[in-house]
Image (cartoon, rainbow, N blue to C red; front, side, top):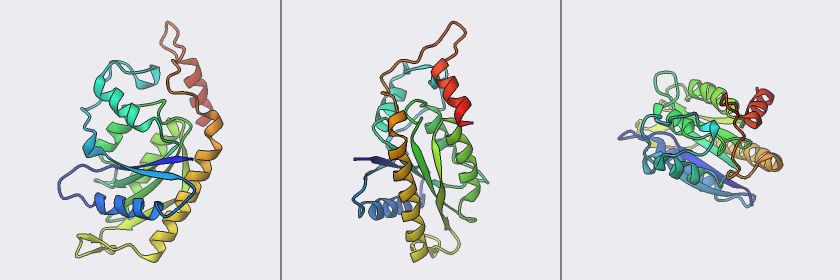
Length: 210
């Protein structure tokens, strides 16, 4: 069965993300067309990107990166739950994305965002990042306002249109994750890198996805 990882992309104290991510998990768990698992970045602390070579050039020599890659590798697709910080993506989420490459490629991704403006600008940036990694970013998304969708600005109160938007997003993530399955190669495969450091397989893949 298709496996979808729900990644909570905020780690700051007093974050609103756990309420939103748990709502995504609870809603998704009512479906029978995929398995869902919540991944909290607080449980996977990573230093600011410290890879000696770009992750696209093969398995990391660093233990923390290998642990993170092993955590996300089994999933067929992802839902990123993200706030918007100053018009963009939280640094901790971008950093987690940058620590891997093959583990993201040829998988689908959907977005649930929250912020004063629904987190829309963070999703715009994430679409660019994810498509560069060779992911299929689905069209439907969920946008949650901190101003109108949180009671007393603290308690998330999902509304009917949020549930409808989430299920449309999940429909697309599952459909694209299924469709991309034939393209996903085993993560254990070692990319072919020539003396100039060029990964022929991934270079070709990126030229197509762009």
